[in-house]
Length: 487
Image (tube, rainbow, N blue to C red; front, side, top):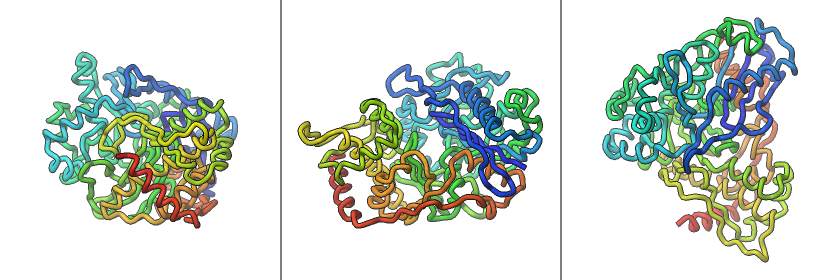
């Protein structure tokens, strides 16, 4: 039997086919080959067409079948991971009404800030564990205020993963974890955040029915099966946002464990067994995938928007070098890049900066000293320093992170980035041969009853461990200097 996982990103859709018995990934595919575009009708906006995601799911599935021909009847379950915080609006015929307002769109910042003030900081932090901020609920209110005729046609709103699940099964549903990432969940009341809905004048009927994170969420329709080349009736048995799913993918399920990514965004996501929040809502708390009524498992997330886009921008500025060559070149510059400092805040409002859109900056540039390799190294160091800044906030919430797990992908392919991360955060990094799509496939196995949570990770291996080295003290000094440059 096989398990099928999808990871719906803003850059691409990844698919993975797992052999359920061995836990080994037998095929992976990414579509499209180049990054999917984001539309920015105005500064600070970011939109994508949800139907494009669905097209790439189909193409990625066909690519899988070319790599590893398999009978659709042998698929025990489908799992979905997806870019968080996006807003998809559909009508009663399940047709998309407007482009999705995606995770890095900043248009609703002021709406969320106003709600934070008027609902009251105490209420928001004690019940939502976050400011309404720039999350899905605030984005929906923006549509309500600015596109009222379109708003009246909305039958259901959903997250990107909910939309793909609907295209697979024909059913509109969501999860508690998903509701929490949209700031629709009341942690204190253990239910829908009705006070927030009332404040925004959002009808509760726009929210989809709740299904378990692990378990039957619908079955593949004949129409979807035909498009995918699969068999109708395959159960969809898991969905989660990309960061909770990445944590699951790395077997990060218990308090004190943490996962990190440095792809489109830079994230550190740690599991907490307390209902905790940052007073300024600079890091965010969501329901983790294995949370239960008796065992609290929340995920505390710090996110840096300007990660992949900084790397991509530098690539275009340096003659479109392959990323591995950029990593090699960055390693040729000295520690600290001869004083060059980069502040990677150029992709919209940053939560860790209290929703300020400060823009990126380069400091201490000397034309007769700094060259291409300095710029590339300063960028990698700057991303790590921004991640450390977010982790410092998590530490203030009484979280103790000493060991971090990551997939061997994206910026963690860079030996320089890995060592700077270990030294600056003073942590041990464990690198695994997994990714979000493989994690979604494993989780689908849990939801389909193929695995328990305890035995879902067979076939996954730790391929490298990175510990702080003799450069740790030097990086503590450089980070302190970088912090001063933020003031």
